Amino acid sequence: MDFAFTQEQLVMRKTIIDFARQELNPGLAERDRLGLFPRQLWEKCAEMRLLAMPFPEQYGGDGFDFVSTVAVYHALGYASKDSGLVHALMTQIISGLQILLFGSEELKAKNLPNIASGKLIYAQAITEPGSGSDALAMRTTARKVGDGYILNGTKTMISNGPVADRVLIFAVTDPVKKPFGGVSCFIVSQGDPGFSAGKPMEKMGLRTLTNGELVFSDCRVPSLALIGREGQGSMLFGETMEWERTLIPACLLGELERIIEECVKYAKERQAFGQSIGDFQAISHKLARMKMNAELGALALYSAAALKNRRKRAAMETSTAKLFISESLKQAALDAVQIRGGYGYMSEYDAERELRDSIASTIYSGTSEMQLNIIARLAGL
Amino acid sequence: MSTSDTIRDFIAGEILHGSQKIPLKDQDPLIESGIIDSLGVMILLTFIEERFSIQIPSEDLMPENFSSISTITDLIERRLDD
Image 1 (cartoon, rainbow over the protein chains, first blue to last red):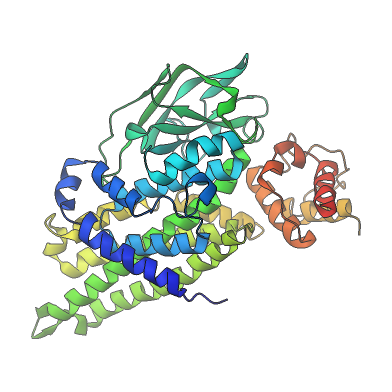
Image 2 (spheres, rainbow over the protein chains, first blue to last red):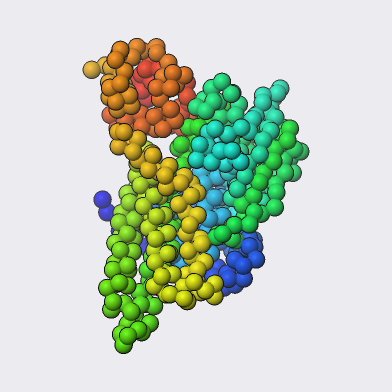
């Protein structure tokens, strides 16, 4: 396998790195402190076509292959310190991929141009107060009534939820066939009667990403709002997770690489006991482990991306990439604080925020424990 | 080996790990009986696509296509004919 970037990918990566450093990082500390979603920066990212990359030109996208999309989001994660905004962008892309892969022609034509342009913000709603890792144990229902469905239930901690114009919601359409053939996916619009979004929830990290509760109370949607076919929800979910577990670790790997660069620079400059702290093995071995994990993470990531690019199944590869890179990032972020000592603990510096942001990565898109369960099953256990 | 026997062997060995003493019949329910769950289907899909060199498109990712060895065999043979 050849994992070298093409000339076009190298140019795109450099463009995005320059853009992110110049446009996305200034003012982050204040936005993080206040927990503000940066709508203006979202629009700048959209102008840079970051939301259009994987979607066909006929739907307003730029028609790039998936490996190129992963390469660019890898660069975005590296250069943008605003991990919350990056997560919001990824949520939009994943929502779009669900519609692209499973939606009717009408749904694609209606939604993908808005996703690619960033004009509307999308979210996907699976998690409920009583079901997280056991996602298909959801209780939200969609009852068939006439030529449509009536939704009832509550989703929680939904990324982009408080600011979303459209939400892809999973609900039980057949309690008897639940969870496997009794879950379906619908698209709901902000403003639909019976649909309301709560305020952003306070959280430890990713504070520029909004997460919140969505309530559906006798919310009527037409049959046309069904993504895929009735009962296809669990398979749609499983398929989409493979794409999500490739795109998300791309950004996380970029963050890991940035943390390593900054730690190496600090370890060379910071003096203690008459020498650079990087000359102490206690520090250099931490950095060597970070570097080793980044190298191995890149192999796992692009191996998974290459499979998805060819529309191959990649449950093992995507779970491995997601698990390994997110755990490596969390450990590196913790080590980065330790290397800096007291400075690492101060909110004035990036390391403190990066640690808070990194913790979520081993929870969302399937916890590390769930990834291990999947890998164990795929290994034959 | 027939398509249905190939699927039967895979489910017996790789999903049930040999725990099923009586061989599965073509019409035995796989989902309702809990023999395969959502992750089990993903494991089966990976095997089917590699073993038969076919691609199962999104529109065929329906639970009823995986409800028995018979429906899985039909799905594979439809795709082989395409």
